[in-house]
Length: 494
Image 1 (tube, helix red, strand yellow):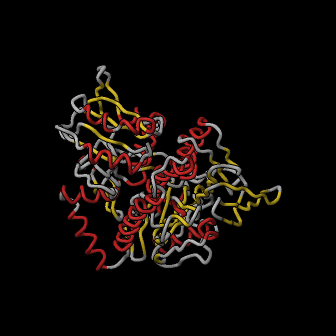
Image 2: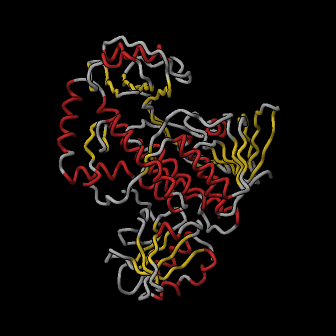
Image 3: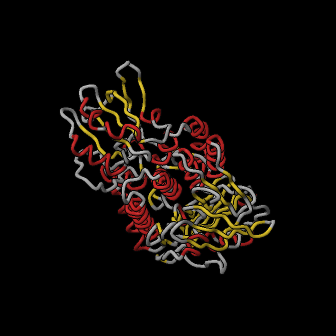
């Protein structure tokens, strides 16, 4: 075998998955079709769940370094620092239930560089570029990938292979995953340009044929017909010019195109994320409109959910069925994103009937509870995994916030500061020694910290999985060690 896991795709999802595998002791091999990372300014930010996942791996400072410029870019392009649902910019961060749980503004190309450096520091993980997977074969012992390289075909084998190779995933097609969904109803075109004619465009907003968005250095359109015959071809200056003429009624010559981007709202999701020893993550598993900026966050959380489970399976330390929980947990989350992005696509269509509905949704967003509902839906903080045992604490099944702790020695720590090892973490108050006693048989599989949780009167102990999900939690008073034992047995092997 050439590796423990072959990861196909060196985008953010593939690189983070490789890093999670390596942190958990597995040896990944990353195969990438492109010779160099893409320089296109694609996704510009990640949500709070993915940002917290990266902070748990020690990347908080580097994310913060990109934040100031990201805020300036966002305000300049959208005229607002608020989030949006279907281009209705009213989702107010200050109104949210957990306003301190924030994402990070970082261009995808910069995030790829950060994750590549993170993976390199972990060691023993090769990234091979200009390696395109053209055939797959799997049996009971592993997967063999046939790869086209500049030097000719090569074959690589590993016990598992994960496709992180984007919406047009070769892995998904070669392995035979069913990929049902809906066809596109709109197309977005965007270029970065300083064309002198931009000042002749009307104000950004709706027109009879679509939507116009522009700011110094950027112009974009949304149309509901006129799809290019081959969406795989790059967006050209002439195509952008024609789109502007249709949408804005102004002929603007664009002499130079930078960062051309075209995407549709086609929405599809793999019926399952695993066939035998081949798995999917990120856009390979689900594609949808980027409305609300949820796609990169969704894919990165696929990676952190899968990494530790796959590594534990490889090492023989996984409880029965652990790898199957990847699809069970992540598929509903992906389906929910497809659901809300389809709703946003419906609200983006032109016409008096949709305009009336947009007005009503806009008015509803003025109510704080509604604003929080939409905010929670888009930032993912409402995600709650179904647990295979009774867990009544409100935090159980959810992503753990970055709790502040005070240890028995008087030190102030945070959850993110304790999760750098990639192992499960059990935190308990000094008043609950029974928690540590119940975890005795699993001490080799997790870190146990005696500490009190600050600023919360509903939490005295928590079991945090390697992906940051709370597997069990306890309030003040005697801890429910029966459920704790069930939780430990479900996710870890003694």
